[in-house]
Length: 199
Image (cartoon, rainbow, N blue to C red; front, side):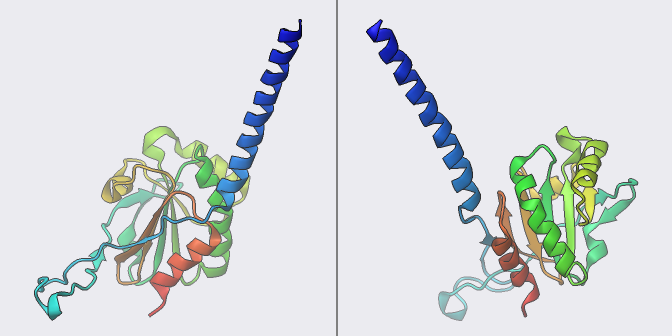
């Protein structure tokens, strides 16, 4: 009987430990600073090689690939439609918890900066979600940012997106400047926006 009581106490303590660890992990992971914001690849400028300019290389400007997505009414929309305006391009899905966690920050940023910056919130509709499910999610949450649907995987294919969420920052000249994989907070979003708006 004493062994059974000891075993039950140990099992209860273990269950409490696991539960506490889960809660702590959830809280800490939301507060952890995102370290995934990366600038575009560096390399030699067109027409240069590593031997020029004293052996130093300068960042190569990488044009952002064009793609076609669709609005809610299935009208085609291309990235190139927004030429001349900085773009925040975010790939998401409604079933993606990290995507959901960053959306309020994107919506607030859109409310503040939507006139100067084009937000393209691209739902990965071709994979495991329907346009109706994704649209219902946006309606339920009341988000105002522009949502587009990657019905045939053209956008995800153009950028090799395999993890959600993924956010890209494209300057007004159409060059990719930075990318983040995983949920980002408002500070990181603002840093990326600064990289595509500051001269």
